Image (tube, rainbow, N blue to C red):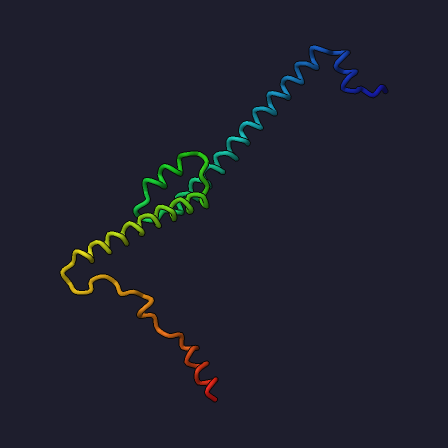
Length: 132
């Protein structure tokens, strides 16, 4: 019994070999494409969910744009939302200070925190300890 190799088979039956090779390639390609689509769709769903999980009320437009850009991850979205939130809070703080300046209420602005800062309770402990 003679051992048939791929090369022997290809040279003895070139048309059949080409047909089998083409069919195997197309089947592999089709299966690979299907697996790739499923894997890609799952990854994209996870990415979008990760972005949506970073939503803080007031930032809906930002999240909507990030979840459909096809590249921003959940952690990247969190950084962007935090940056916008900081900007918003800084703006609100400035608005409150300005409103306080316009107020007719005496001392409407917050006190200087350095002047009203309480002593650290451990300072008193050290005073007592050193007096002993």
